[in-house]
Length: 322
Ligand SMILES: NC(=O)c1ccc[n+]([C@@H]2O[C@H](COP(=O)([O-])OP(=O)(O)OC[C@H]3O[C@@H](n4cnc5c(N)ncnc54)[C@H](OP(=O)(O)O)[C@@H]3O)[C@@H](O)[C@H]2O)c1
Image 1 (cartoon, rainbow, N blue to C red):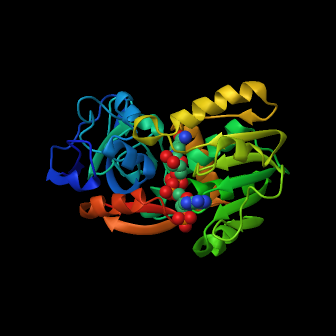
Image 2 (cartoon, rainbow, N blue to C red; image 1 turned 30 degrees about the vertical axis):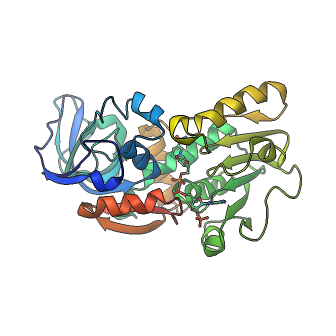
């Protein structure tokens, strides 16, 4: 089968398209013929090996990448199932999020991390849905409730577009921060108010949000806290720290400083699970949320697609057609 192979940490140009052997599913696993795979910021971190801390995680490896084929979120058709899998059959159309291996024609992954493809989405769109779980889990961790005011910094990107839509489905009042070219996009996703960061500063206006989801991390922690109500919650997903620890520095600082404040600081790492996939499928099929496809690239152009994602100016999500 054809696959994108990751041999050394570095820029996406080091990835190669190769012919490798098709994987074989274990007892609880499924072999999926991949039709589309998401190319995300998380993939960029794994491929470049930065922040370096990621190399110590299950996604990384030392001295070089542990996993030969990158890629996590995907959609495709079940080709074969392991001996103990009863929930899926060959021919079923599915989507889900593996740990690795999605930038290939075939992928082996646990059956429990797959769900039926949303009936109203193409494979290319469905491959992007698993990343909606980042927004969903983040908003749950922050404890967002109907009627509360949410600020989303970085509302036009891969996670932001999901955050705006899911928060609206939860009944929140959403203020989205984005650049001029994305104002109409985030409005169309349901944002009640939009702050164009090239013209206005969301830090002006005093404490007014119960939750801030920060997908950019371009302002000091103390400044972000100043827009929260007295018991508001700040949830960072990004932010400085350089090549060694990345957002971990901000997270640790925030956890420490929240010991001395009524304002809360929460953090999370998205954990793929079938329950959230089914929840997102329901949202998508009921028209409450939809993936925003910025561009679909052929698998052989994975490096170019990842270069684009790495710039940090995505408008929705990027997908690879396999
Ligand atoms: N905790 C977790 O489990 C988890 C999971 C997934 C992702 N993440 C993290 O979440 C972060 C966001 O991911 P993503 O996939 O949404 O990134 P993305 O797709 O690259 O989107 C970033 C967005 O931020 C906007 N932006 C850039 N500068 C901005 C500024 N100064 N003010 C406001 N918006 C700005 C960009 O649009 P413009 O350039 O037009 O402004 C772009 O739309 C990343 O750091 C990622 O690592 C965390």
